[in-house]
Length: 235
Image 1 (spheres, rainbow, N blue to C red):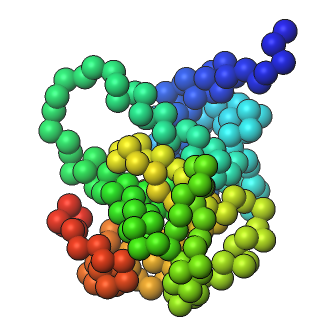
Image 2 (cartoon, rainbow, N blue to C red; image 1 turned 90 degrees about the horizontal axis):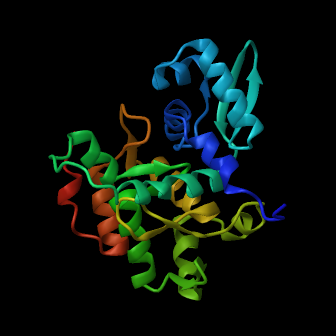
């Protein structure tokens, strides 16, 4: 028997449309109840329970009990980062050409990938951080330069504390819509949390789609020189 871990087990877990729908709904890092996930997947409560049990046993989800309710969420950032890029493979499949919906355009512009920014917004910020010399690239990870240490300190991001966490500091996450990497890990999450706290971005009615505010356009323009925001003009 092959000693290497089998990809077949993961393929079996995500091969179900219902389970894939549940996983995709949790890509923004939040937790949902079985009822919410069953409704999103379009299956009965009993069927959802079976699917969720398999996902938990397979290590893709974790279940936490709060009071009378059980909440399900991704087992970690690495799960989101491993699964979301699989959309790359799907997009090579021939399909009829049709105009993208407003929601499709928005999710490509700015979305959450677990707890960090993705889409055009996430890639634009990452690209600007590298271009300004705040981040350097090494073996699919980002390193903070001496110049970057000062930049992030001025923003109020405590890099020392981030480096002490158990998660990866600043890995590259391949963005499925932009086909370019954005910064993930502890640093990506800290940047995103800062952007929320400073009102540079805000949530929308769609769980994963985020909106760049006018203040965010101004501040990111000043701090990172990002000027092209035309594709972010949506309500």
